[in-house]
Figure 1 (cartoon, one colour):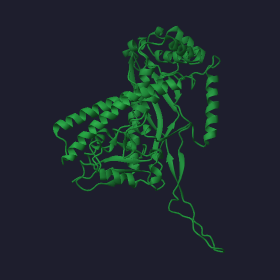
Figure 2 (cartoon, rainbow, N blue to C red):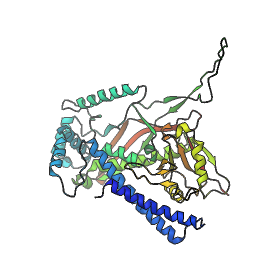
Figure 3 (cartoon, rainbow, N blue to C red):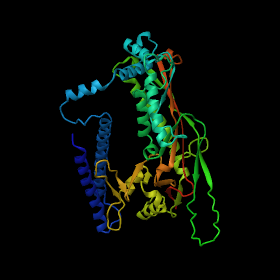
Figure 4 (cartoon, helix red, strand yellow):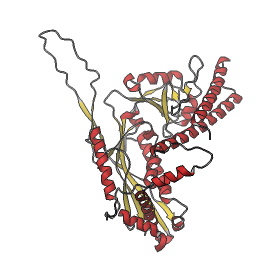
Length: 456
């Protein structure tokens, strides 16, 4: 398999070829590409997107292997020694946890013998009651409420020790609590990220142990300045005005997923991973819509609703120009532009890729260094399909510091197993709940701004 460097180089050459097509058209005085040029341009960018996807896959695998302390293995032949060493690292406790949660999923099947003996024994060792109809999991992350960063690190360390202590054979808890961390919840979190452009945009994500209102103080002192004083002059008072942003905890559900007894008894299916992915994707889609376009009434306040927008001139409902993007870029205060990102949907990106500067150079540039993102005017971008398209009258482009958008997750994710309700159909239902909220932390200096199209 090609290396990441080889793929980056190939991507760079393709980007150069696409740029030459645009530059050639502008050199001929044409504002639009001929059909043959358009077809070639689109084909090149299809190849670029395929390479980008392949690069991300390799980078993701590298991250997993580094987290395991194992060097990357991408040889055509298997490495038995490495495989043996990797298997030996999987402790008995981890295997018990994995087998126990698999047993919990299978326990809902009508057949009494649906749960293999090894899963029942593993559940006994970790203290998981297979007859319990619900489980509560904790997503990863820090509990930030009321804690300094050093306190957070100490809390995480002590909490991890508590989890390990509760996972021992002496634990007789009815639900298994937080001691079971298997593929199901890992897949939920991965799916939340994969289908949540807002979570990938660098937003501040905090975890809280409870779901009560979470006030976050804000202050805007940017217009106040100090003064030069002479000897004996009375110093005036300039007070600081505080405000606050309050995050709530709105409940989201995956809805029910019905699983047949036949599927549950099929040992070739990793049911926890499959259901974790499905449940996570459903919640991820729903919450991303809320974090993007939510009204803030009975739901999160989406970034589009919270950001500050400039409406373009009449007649620009289907157009986007270099001037629009440059003006938006510089409308954001320089203090927010370090680390700022763009956000738009994929159809908007397609239009942006056709834009050039005064020297006929494409505005869109591919990331050619390992892990470097593709950029627009020097800043990376995030594709969010829940953003409006340029062809609508909606708000199509955002730019700014997305770390100022706060997402608050209540740490507990509840997974329910409904055994009896669909028993006559030989089916078991699974569903998940989580509570979350989001809003832009804007004290009045507008860290995220956008463009809104205008009709003719």
